Image (cartoon, rainbow, N blue to C red):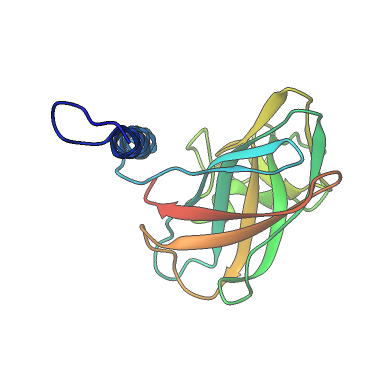
Amino acid sequence: MSSNPEGISVPTRVRLLSLVAALALTGAAVAGCGSSDGATSATTVAPEGVVITDPWVRATPGGSTLGAAYMTISASEGDRLVRAEVPTSIATTTEVHETVTSDSTDTDGAMGASEVEGSEDTEGDGMGGGMGQMTMREVSGVDIPADGDVVLEPGGFHIMLIDLVAPLAAGEVVPITLTFEKAGVIEVQATVRSS
């Protein structure tokens, strides 16, 4: 075993340098996970090429029975999100929804955005009906294009948490089980945020 002038053997020096490098990379990764509101973001990479980035749930006011979850999903080979589920201790029903602008002939029973506390009423007018009203409806799935992504966000595709057992407070974590046609079941942890 050879030594250097500082009295540290070469194998020990290599291990120390490796440890320092690993700690530096870990620190950079943690620093890169912050968001503007102080919450952390997460990335889940499935072996099947599906990547879920920054899953989060909007905090709900007391008394609200509806919540929504958002994230970005990409799939190198393309896939389809066909189901989402949270534990029944959080919400009794979980559905994949899309927010659309309705016209006066839209009678499919879609839920009006003005009916949902904290909902994605992007026009902010809370219109009670007629053309241009933002409504939410359950969809059978969301296609994820190959080498592309789909953003589940307010005003677009999202995951509805229906009949919440208790309000969702900022900082809590909601486990969400996502089911894909090709990738199968992927578990993510979504942080509750105030916005």
